[in-house]
Length: 252
Image 1: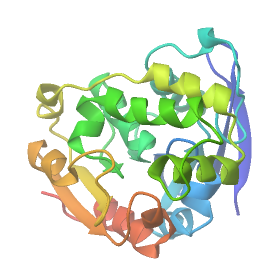
Image 2: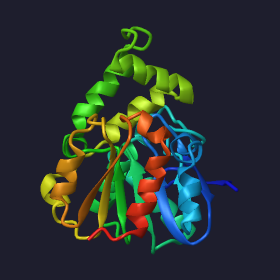
Image 3: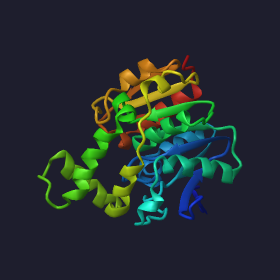
Image 4: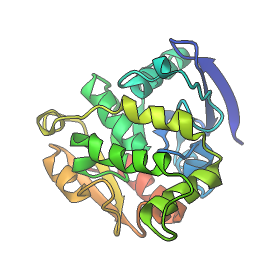
């Protein structure tokens, strides 16, 4: 069973979340232009984690899914996605939890850790080192997507991103503002983290740099590879299985 609810973030923006399962809380954050249903529920990953004993909490990021999509840039300050996650945890009264995310969700996990989040374990998925330390590169790609909608060459990377935007019914104005919220996390900061962090990435996914380099930089990091590229890995059961293995197994 999937439950739905929402709350108001500190600036009044409505943030929706879904949850399933009982047990240890796991905050699970989806990727850019996606939402909780597509990233975690549709392909069975949330169910796999719930069956492993987790209370899986899956917010729709602002400008995504069932959450509000304001067109006022004032609602998109730097690191606002991190602020929203801290506010959701506070709203739910959760202080002891695990944390995971895919793509933009993985980047949000990194920013939470950089700003003092203290989960028992963390998973950064669909993400490489460059995607955390040099966020402007990925941001430029998506700005090109949004600034040239309907003009991308069929089959190109930008065309495929636009196709995904259409599939999820995304709001390009609100989503473009999300790009302004990105904050780099320095490699020196990542190297200081002592908690167990799993890096899970598709075998053909280098969209955000090297996952192996990220795992190697972490003090207690472990790399898990799954089939697929940045888009297709989400559709594979192996992604959810890797999350379960990372969160329940021995990473050290």
